[in-house]
Length: 302
Image (cartoon, rainbow, N blue to C red; front, side):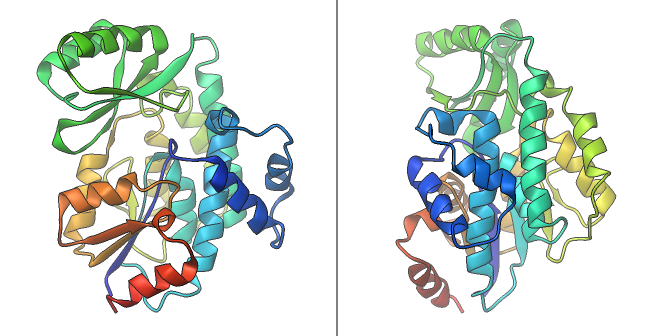
């Protein structure tokens, strides 16, 4: 079986994921930082969108799921990829850094991102269905909004201060363009995050890293990378530069997987893969009721 694994980013986490993780770490050894986060007595849907809570939560959930899944796989993955914040876990799954370091990195990354926009007004991300047209590029520049992530069919995630995004949203409404706010409060992958790259790279330099055990797609350069030095640079680079996920999907397709499994949370990436190539069987762990159901589905392609 030719299996590719994708680790999701922020935006789809729900209370059920928080409860899943809480139950998992009750019976496993996890760093104190994660246990303290999960014993927070005031956790609701709003809390789940707070950057310094969301990123470590997602990373920990992905690591728990990968621990369970990887021990049952009959075949090694032909490719591992992480979307945005999902790279903390994808690098760990590929063996570049440890699970404990992955959690620490997610905490450092989220803190640096919040610090980078501390002097700005409220910020956000949003999706524009026709966002990659030349005319829209001019509109974004006019209002201080930046492209953050390119998607298929001309779709674009944009980021900036909320006041600028509101002006762009008004333009989209007037021109009958599909616009959707995302539940993310930091303008990831835009120049507003320029203060994150070097401190994050400096932090990564203090860790013991290893070459990946499996082909690892680095979103920062939209390519499979094996050099530890280049992987560190790509990981830090993508925080404040455009993430070309459309091209990343093309790279995944080039590896000719039979099956793509999204670790979650959410199933947006699996949907993107299916749209890209109907011949690839792509689903998310969130679509299954149990690990047994996942393994049964994977077993069909062995």
